[in-house]
Amino acid sequence: MSVKSSSVLLTGATGAVGSELLRRLAARKETTVNALVRRGSTRQPDIAGILRDLEPVARVVVLEGELRDGPTLGLAEADLNALARETTHIVHCGGSTSFTLPLSEARALNVCGTRAILDFARRCDNLQCVALFSTVYVSGKRSGGFSEDDFGDAGMGFVNSYEQSKAEMEEIVRNAMHDLPVLLLRLSTVAGDSNTGMVRGFNAIHHAIRLVYNGLAPMIPGDPDECVDIVSSDFVADAALHLIDHGDTGVFHLASGAESSSSLADLIGATVDSLVRFRPAWRKRAIEKPLIVDLDTYDLFVRSVEEAGNEVMRDATRSISTFAYQLAHPKLFDTARTRAALDGSRIAPGRALEFYPRVVKYCLDSSWGTRPC
Image (cartoon, rainbow, N blue to C red; front, side, top):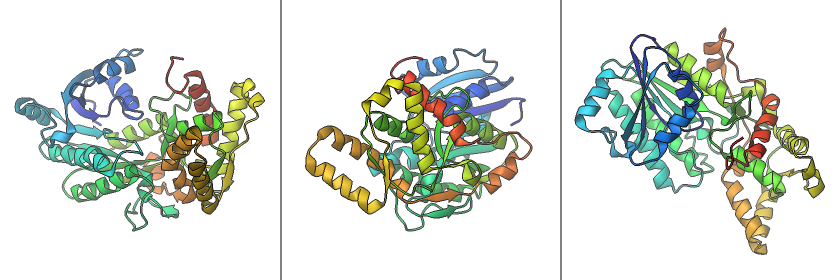
């Protein structure tokens, strides 16, 4: 990204990844960051909080709009035209990462929102890059290897509406690659900061930690030896900006890959070990380590929970099913293109088990984001 007169339209600036990108962009001289937030939301104070401990040298402007309004982005025509003339880079982190939305709502946020961004991008005469964030889990229910050249829809189906809406989003993105400088970044599960463990956006893995802590995840479907791919938020932000800076286009996996992933058994073991280490009293509750079972056994367990009528266990099992079933479809994400592009940059995902305990500690200390720490 050229430092001189660069102007970045950033969506999702308060999310787990967008907030990390905002902090880095705000430290760049002669850069303007136009952060698009939903009209009427409380996100403007959130942005101020994200930048509180920094001395931003970039110009950060908060724009109130609405991606679901289509290519106008919910902006007045004059403001839209001015933004189009100014914008050199678009970084689209907005949308929904919820696994539980109805498919129609997930599509409205992830597919229609991205279409609006692409339509706006075509109005930008000075555009150098439009970076769009997706997920490696567009792979859905397929098992085995998944490369940066593979498409999401292989007829295998999806575990949840998030995966499906992102796969459908990628269909329109592939078409846009013919006329726009598109950088499509597929993210693995973002756990938290590798140095501090700080979590800006709690997701499935943090929910799973909480269920283990409360003794509400006695079984997990999967293979003990399968790879579980998690990455740190700082790796994702640093890698994304490196690719944007260097004008890369195409599809890149920001994932651990075979080199840095852990096994499911090791990750569950690290979860329990961290809970004992950081909350010694937890051991006295005699909560058993979750068993790793095959899919048929897990399905039987889910049915028995539903029939038993224990509302707490039933609700916990339902909440985990939106992502636990993904573990029953083990896969390995190829990162060859990403590793080649990052070669020499000293940016790498790092081994998951080295930073994961710090994430568990942050979850405990912050009570999963409900108190400052």
